[in-house]
Length: 416
Ligand code: NAD
Image (cartoon, rainbow, N blue to C red; front, side, top):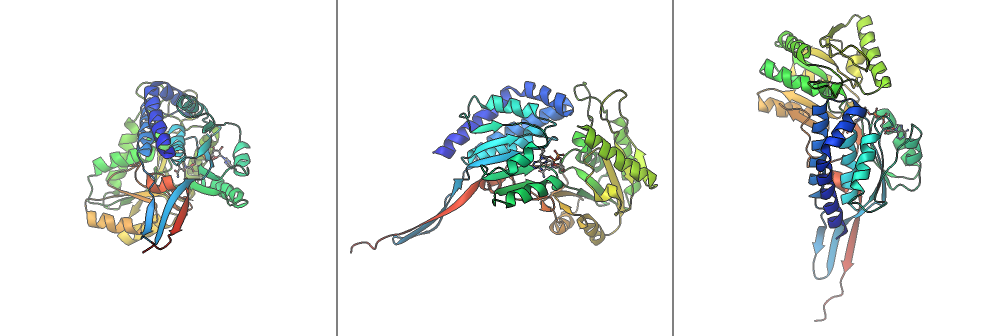
């Protein structure tokens, strides 16, 4: 009965969020910097996730059921969960924790990034209308708060979304008490474009896969491998799109891309681009940034840099994309996999057999074929390698907020 009540409350939270979407969108644009259309998309996705998670059922698995013996496995709540979320999608990625934590019957202490606390505080306020006091708690503070949470004995689980570096610190801290953890970490997703595609159409899709939210998406395309036969035409197309897409402060009508969210990230991306330029790589400033204040980085393409350059090896998390030539299928798979991350990747081709063959060999938790950023609340999501451990979304993601409990009953033989 308790999970049913929690699901009902969660579904009502979805309605509350939808009813207050305009206010949350405005706050999100103001604090995160993203353009209004992208903030609307994020809030709509959060509503969809709340509804979808509320509809999931936690199963009871009956392993054996005879007159003499019954074995069943249930899933019981963990207790108190700590959620730690990043600044790129503060609303959606917080909802990814609120939903399953509550449906599974836990209480949650949620800590947004110190760089984007306001939308999540407001969510907490809104949801307080339907969630009992103490069940959903939003706390904010500076850099010291995360480690205080992960070291606190009161937490039964920490669900963390953020960088791989911080993820390692969370894991070290959790090791002390064997606190359960889910780690959703960084990515350096490769896109592989075969020569049989419609160059114009795929360049358009790949552009938005790389540059939506100004590249600040864990599953953004962060490296593009384009077949030699179409490379020049493809790069020219990307340049043309970049020249046409307006970058402006998020609240400006018509803004399609916004600034980078914070000073540290701006400095990091600027330094990566500067280093590429100083090493003589083909840095193309393809877009333009508005005059005036703001952490604007124009859309930048790097023309065929070597695989061992920093711009290819590291997660840039900004509007800068290295584009590389390839010729062979085996070669490009090896190059895509030669990376410490394994979050997601995309394959673009009209040859479905080839796409599936390549997908099977990519070392990533998600592979999208002829589409990108196509996440679903019902599909398991999570990283291979250094992109994380544990899963979010779908039933597997929900069960991460539970402990399994197997109960066996030996029954007395019936009097005969
Ligand atoms: P971050 O690791 O700097 O911070 C994430 C959160 O952790 C913040 O709330 C921060 O305050 C907190 N934190 C910082 N130090 C901590 C510590 N020692 N212990 C506990 N918590 C601590 O990440 P970010 O810069 O906010 O986000 C960008 C990164 O997140 C990128 O690498 C991106 O790929 C990744 N990300 C991953 C996913 C995913 O689902 N895999 C989704 C979004 C973002």
